[in-house]
Image 1: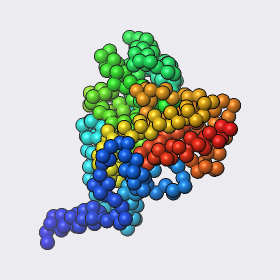
Image 2 (image 1 turned 180 degrees about the vertical axis):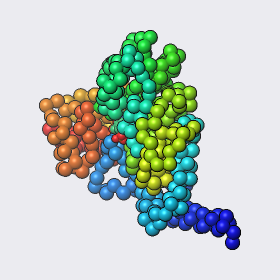
Image 3 (image 1 turned 120 degrees about the vertical axis):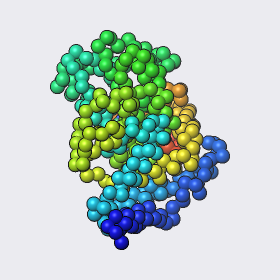
Image 4 (image 1 turned 30 degrees about the vertical axis):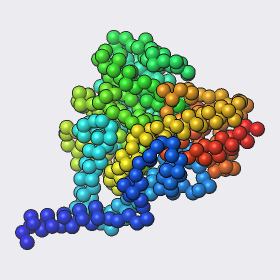
Length: 416
Ligand SMILES: Cc1ncc(COP(=O)(O)O)c(C=O)c1O
C-alpha cells in the first residue's frame, strides 16, 4: 500500500470507530417524535424520562444550569472514553471535523452563516471577547442595561476604566405596556458618540424580555453596534440572528439548549468580523476568515463536548423549536397563574405578559429571605430554584404541569 493510501485507510478506520459508537438504552430523537399538541401532557411526561433527574427531584433551574437528555450525556461519555483510549494527534484531529459540523449546524439553528459562528466555553467568555476585542477610544459611549449579567456589565465598566470610553447604564420600566416603553430608554440615551448597545435578550435577574429585534434595528439604522447576550434566550426562544440584525450575539449551551455542558456561542455578523481582535490565541492559530478559527482557538478543549452538539440540535429539531418555545411559555404562564391564585402574598418581579417575558419567573414573598426559601425548597422539597433577583424558577420542557403544582404547593407551605 502506498503511503498516501495507507494514511487514507487509517483515517477511514478512525472515522468509522469514532462515528460508529453505539449508544445503548437511549431513545433516538426520531423515536421520540414531535408532540401532536403542546397541551399533550402525556407527551411531556414521556419526554421527561429522557433525562436522568431522579423522580423525586424537580429541576426548575434551567436559567442557571440545565440537564441534558440521555442521548447527549451518552454521546459525551462515549467520545470521552474513545479519546481516553487514543489521545494521538491523528485521533484528536477527527474532532476538528466534528467541530466544523457542530459550527455548521449551530449556524443553521441560529439563522446565521457558518463563518459567523464560533464555539467558546460559555457566554461570559463570549461577552468578554467582544468587550476586550473591540477597539473603542476615549470619548466613545457604550449603553448597557442595568439588568445585564456582570460579564456584559462589569466587563464594560472595567474595560472603560482602562481605555477611557464612557459607559451609560439605563433602566427600563418593570412592567412595560408596549415595545415602545422598552425601546425608549435606549433611544433617549443615544448621542453622536454612541458606538454600541449591550443588553441581555432576557434578564436573569427579572425575567423581563427586551424587544431585541426592535432595539437592534433601531441601533443599526443609526450606525450603532449591538451585543445581545442570549444566555437566557438561546434554546428557549426560536431565534434568527440575521432577522434580528444584531452585530454580536452570545450564549451558552449548558442552559436552555440542554447541553452539552461548557460550550459558549459567539456570533459576529460578517460586517463586524474585522472589528474584533482575538483576546486569546492558542496553539495552531493563524489569521483566518471565520469566527471559529479567528477568535475561538482557545488551547486545549474538552473536545467531546462540542462534538455532542449535533445530538442536542437534532433533539430540538425533532421536538420542534416552536413547540419547545410554546411549551416553555405555556408552563411559565401556568406557573405565574398558580402562584398568583394560590399564594396571594407573592409579589412578581417578572412581567405577567408572555410578550415581555420568557422561561423565567421571579417573585418575592414579603418578609421572607430568598436564600433561606431557596435552601428550604431544595433540602425539604428537592426543588432546584435559584435566589436571583427574588425566588427564580425556570421551568423547561422536562418539567410537567404536575411539577408546577408540586412547586407551588411547596412555596405555599413555606410562605406560611
Ligand atoms: C444573561 C446572562 N448572561 C451571561 C451568563 C453567564 O453564563 P455562563 O456562566 O454560561 O458564562 C448568565 C448566567 O446565568 C446570564 O444569565
